Amino acid sequence: MRENGVDQGHAEAHAGAARDLIMSELVTKSDLSAALTAQTLALTLRLGVMMAVGFSVLATLMKIL
Image (cartoon, rainbow, N blue to C red; front, side, top):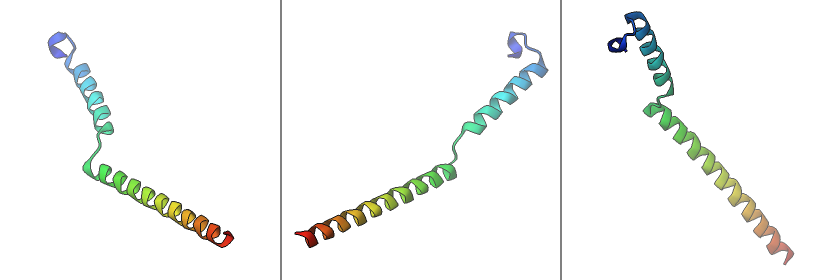
């Protein structure tokens, strides 16, 4: 930016703003790991509930028939 006529103060302010924006959007390994763990837990819970409902329906049908 300084090579294109922007003074030092403005160039530093723009660079700082760009750095802050980029750093706030980055995902760390710990962020990714936490999200993956939460997703795994949610899917496991959902599968367990689906199996329990399925077994309950099957048991009810077996009693009826």
